[in-house]
Length: 409
Image (cartoon, rainbow, N blue to C red; front, side):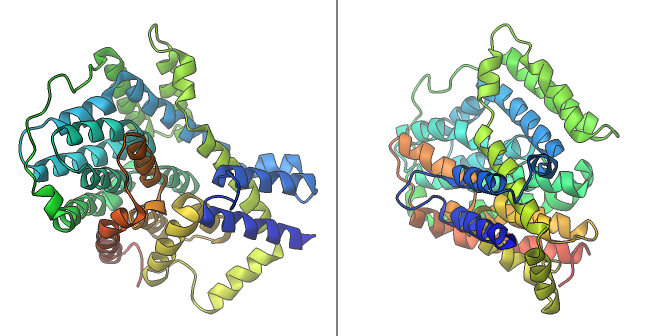
């Protein structure tokens, strides 16, 4: 019955690549859940083994960080930042730069998916109200958020997983990945400015009054205190997930923000996707098929421990099955030695997500939120700037990893 594990595993990742089952409204999370249930119902995975396969520290850390991000969302910070960017004085180029910078810096310390979810509608409203095309600014929002999130181990879901599995230090990760992340933000700006120059040549009209929503300063202060607390605790020997929970839980003590709303802002679909993929990839990794596959790759020197293998592999995988499933698959099958390749896995998988609209969840969220606001950001629109800015970012990141001695050619 080991063939069943291989079949379920293969169909799951085909589903990850397609994004949904043709003819059904079944998305990636639903596909992973059904696959996990098949393994359990068939007896190929026991309930206790499924529980052991799920990396609870990673899920707890991800949950806690989502709560911290939800604090800022409920305080209105993301909407205020997007509104202030949209009404800023200056040229369209300046507004684009501020969009990328704000999205990138916020995503470095908060979940990038929540950042773009909250900022996109306000950005569309403000930019469109000033007589400009919102599309290049939406590209800047997604591209900047992805590039900024690559800088830290808490910037996006795959980095959180990699940081936990690799036991990476927060500050050392920032030293390794911060520079290519910042440079990538500049490359995002340069590519969009060049390739959308005709749309950005339109001078913005004066901003309307009252566009920027009010900010709850007290709730924002609580959120800032929580982030500072995280930074302090991450420098101690306290397990990262325990420290994050200790910081996030007190945020629920509020007379204005209902705990139900805070907890409801957590992306439970993503947490369920993680849990199910843990079960599926663990079952496959324990089967003979995984060992044969790794042996076959090793014989041909195709293991992702070198730049020339990892960069194209992650570029393709992140834009087909998605960067989160791709990272989970690689971590389950590849015996990683040393921190260098782990840094490369985090940095390259995140930056590769800027290539196409389907490359990261943040991109899809921006497109969906824009569509709800009446702006259509198409696959072609995204690829127009996404392909060159991603190839340039990957080249910079690969060169940085090589020069720093973290990875070999």
